[in-house]
Image 1 (cartoon, helix red, strand yellow):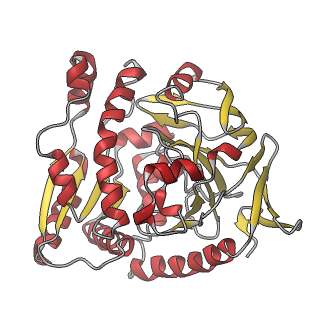
Image 2: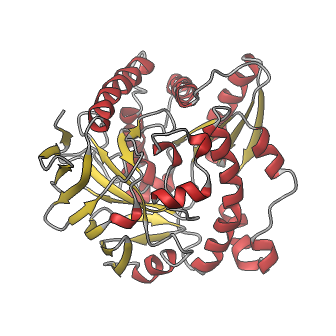
Amino acid sequence: MLTAKQLQRYADVLWWGLTTARTSPFKKNDIVLIRYARPAVKLAEILYGRLLDRGMHPVQRMNPTPVMERYFYLNSSDKQLVFLPPGEKEMMSCLNGSIFLYAPESITHLSDIDPKKIGRTAVAQKALRDIANQRESRGTFSWTLCVFPTAELAEHAGLSLDEYTRQIIKACFLNKTAPISHWQNIYKNAQSIKKWLNAMDVNHYHIESDNMDLEIAPGQKRQWIGISGRNIPSFEIFVSPDWRTIRGKYYADQPSYRSGNRVEGVRLEFRKGRAIKISADSGENFVKKQLAMDKGADKVGEFSLTDKRFSKINRFMANTLYDENYGGHHGNCHIALGASYSNTYAGDRKRLNPARKRQLGFNESALHWDLVNTEKKRVIAHLKSGKIQVIYENGRFTY
């Protein structure tokens, strides 16, 4: 498990992430939410004390236990599934920051629950996420999250708890005396890559591998973003494309756990932006139900690339945060089905209202599901000038 010193370093890195993600500085009397699962209580306690020392108001919330979650979906009426507790919207409207410590004691306890029930709750809770997104666009809110190692995660990743913990230590530089300096170096390098990508006048990108042949157009007023402090760790650089432009075949060779369901070998074929063919080696029925959650669930909200020079992650971790940042031999790309990110808008986000989002092809959905490809691949930018440029090959950006 993590040592006392590594827990202190983890808290340092999370604070770096939260402050880096915020466009305006934190100040005394700001309100910061700490959400955590039971195994991560020691890290939550350190963060709680750090926030008090900074003159802030920490609010702590422990996630429901697996038994509670299971009771909820088995026993809830239709009204209970979509119920938002009094004060939740008010709290979200006042929060200045949020830190989530993901430490599941079970990731399969909902595997036999009707996905439609889970989807209904997700749709209802989107109202809270919308408030957070609006505050973030105004610079008054930021968030970050991390994974705390548990036996459950290790088991489903096919690793010992010690092996799983070592992946987290390496990925977050907790084995370094000054982990923040390593994050700052990656942040600086990523800034240069994003500037290079955003300077291109791109018509569309072509992604090709043994099992993929996909075209994605960024659309108008888009920018590549990433490595911003919002996820610890995060090595991905991504864009929310114009969903209407996507066509071709995508393949996720990496397994994915969602709502207790393990899914493997997802194959999607897109036409005019919609997934018209959906199959999977396992969990196909679950995938199809997830992509029918709402009108935007079968469309793409994100396209991402991870450079293997940044990421030390080289094992499947049974957790999207780590798996979408996989480095390994060939890096990775992933698409996210569902919601797009408004901070990939290159204009004034305060003016990015729902009508403008629709006009520009930003996708709206309660779903956001990252599906990862770790094959050897090439990504080619087709420029509006007619020229082409390879931007990603052999697991790294060509910058």
